[in-house]
Image (cartoon, rainbow over all chains, first blue to last red):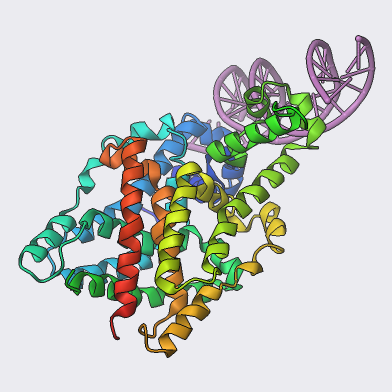
Length: 204
Length: 204
DNA sequence: GTCTATACGGCGATAGAC
DNA sequence: GTCTATCGCCGTATAGAC
C-alpha cells in the first residue's frame, strides 16, 4: 500500500462499519454499504464472501476497539486515584470519537445470538481485571473501605458508558447539540471519579 | 372480552413485542410475528396496517413502560433516602421481568430515526424531574452537599439500567445463569443507594 | 374475522464480459 | 479487479373466497 489512497477493500470495510453501526445488522443492506463505499454490490461479495462474513469482521474490530482500552488502562500499573481518573478520561474521549460503538456491540448481543457468541469465546476472558485485585489490596491496607468490588467496577463502567448508549435520548430530552453533549460527558470526567473515590474512602 | 382467552389482535401484539424486543425492527419479520402468534401474515396486516404501524405501537408501549415508572417514583412525595431505595428496587424488579426493554428503546433511537422521534415529542418533556429540585432543596437545608444534580440523576439511571443493557455480555463473561444474574442486580439494590447517599452526605 | 393465493419489490449473491 | 445483468428468495402487502 505505497500510496495514500485507501484500497477498495478498505473503503468497503469502512463503509460497512459506518452503516452497521448506524443501523445494526438487520436494517443494513449490502446496497447501502456498496453505495457508501462508492462501488457496487458485486465487489462487496468479492472481497468478503457475504454480508454475514463482513459483519463478523466489523463486529470483531468494534468489540476489541471498545473493550481493549478498558482492560488495558484498568490493568496499568498506576495508583488507584490516578487510574480511575485516567480511565474515565480516556474512555470518554474514545467514545466521543466513536459514540455508536457500545450500542452496536451490545445490541448485536441480544437474544443469545449464535453469530456473535462464536466470535467472543476467545476474547471474553482476557478482561479478568486486575482492577478488582488492586481495590482489594487497598482495602487490606486500610486505605479504602471493603466492599463488593465487582459491583464497584460495574458501576464505573455504567457511569462512563451509559450516557453514550442513551445519547440520542439525552440530546432529545434536553435539546442538546453534539457539542453540548460533549460538555456534559466532559463534566463527568471529574464527577464520576469524585463520587467513586468519596464512596471508597468513607469508612463503612 | 368476557372470556379469558386472548383475542387474535392481542396475541399478535404480544408476539410482535416479543420478536421486536429480541431482534429489533430490522431483523424482525412479519412472518416471525405471525408464526409466534399462531396465525398468518394476512391477519397481522388486517389488524395493524403494516409492520411499521405495528412497530410504532409496540415501541410506544415499551417506551412508556420503561420510563413512566422512572418519573413516577422520582416524583413521589418521599424523603430522599427512601425515594432512592424505592426507585432502585422498583426499577430493578421491572427490568428483571422485562430485561430487553431498555436495549430495545435505546437501540431503536440510533441515527436520528424519524420513525421514532415523532412518537416521542409528546412524551419526552413530562420527565422534567422533580427529583433534581428535591436534591437542590436538601442541599440548601445543608443536609447534603451541593453538586451537579443533573449528573447525579444520570449516574443513578446508569447504575440501575446499564447492567441490563449489557446483560448478555455480563452473563457470558462471568458465566452466569439468569438466576445468578438476578442475584447480581439484587445486590445492587443496597449497593447503589449506599454509594449515592455516601457521596451526597459527604460535605464537599 | 379468518384463511389461501398471489402480486410486487428489494434483498443477497453470482455469472460472465471486460 | 471491476462492472452489468440477472437469478432466486424472502420480505410486505393485498385480493378474494369463505
